[in-house]
Length: 130
Image (cartoon, rainbow, N blue to C red; front, side):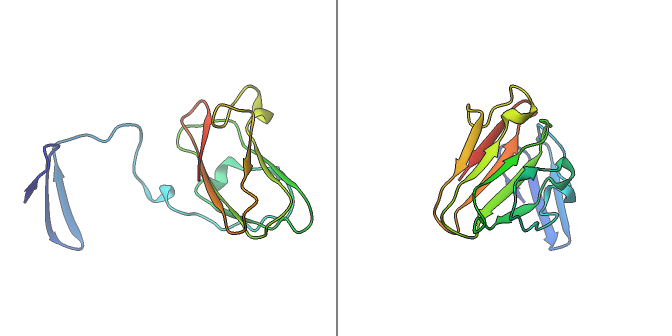
């Protein structure tokens, strides 16, 4: 047993973990928090909120791509991964009226090939990491 000051964790084997004390704030940990799909993207459009947890490999070989985020909901998250360099990938939060991403209406993914950005929502606005 190890005391972490936040509770106690004891492990018996890889299939059994007991946690006592402490709290988890802000939501529920569940399998839906994991990667749900990989959605190859070559054109812009509206991101489906039901695809939260998905990775979007994006090929900009055909030109600029704008992806509109869905209405905000706590815990929504997406990973956007650039497959090709050149052309612009814009993530649009403002398409749902007054919503921001990192304090702005849109976010531009770096033009560097293989760059990735994770976008998540706090229930009111979106944030981009990467």
